[in-house]
Length: 247
Image (cartoon, rainbow, N blue to C red; front, side, top):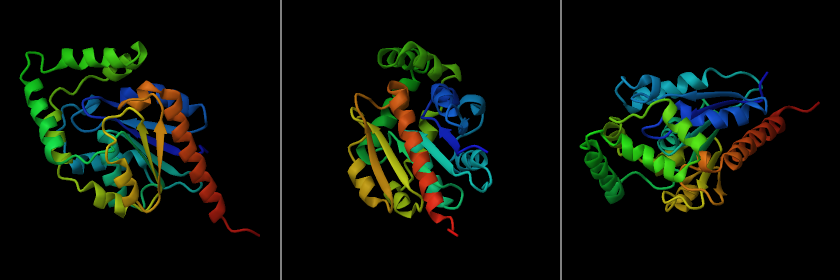
């Protein structure tokens, strides 16, 4: 029996392949690791993105409860926002949540600016593929770049995904989450400006900073990120042991 089931949810325009390095690291610790493709991405690139469809994909990956095996949902950026929303809507479907690189609410001028940038990129002859790959090569190691692009790049996913996520009330969803949350952010991540506000909104949460890491923390500092996930698993194990009746 595995120590835990860990479901990994990718960021926008990427796919499950971005988690290949993490899957290898986590599997060494007797974990059942599953990385999903969201609608409009990876193997599901032809499926329209919607919040309802994304929730179904995550729920199917988490599966039914198994006695003695906690279920930990891990999401990065878009995956982090979706993980928060899933945990708020389905409190009995998981035991813990790692929400990484999602420390700013997707709303207001920041969201509108991101949407405007996405529209401009979408008008490029290659719809932004060259730019996407060039930025990845600038900030990531060659092996991380290979992981990011291996499952394909969802060039048309930006607008529908951003529109759907912009409808979320992230703080209200955080407040509704009943399982422990680990907010994991790179110290250099430009998306962490509201991380303290999000931390205060949660019932049971802690904030983990990864030094010298930018937004793609799981790819920039993979060992440290895996350590944060393993720490969450260990905490879930301790809590489960404390709830067991003693003789």
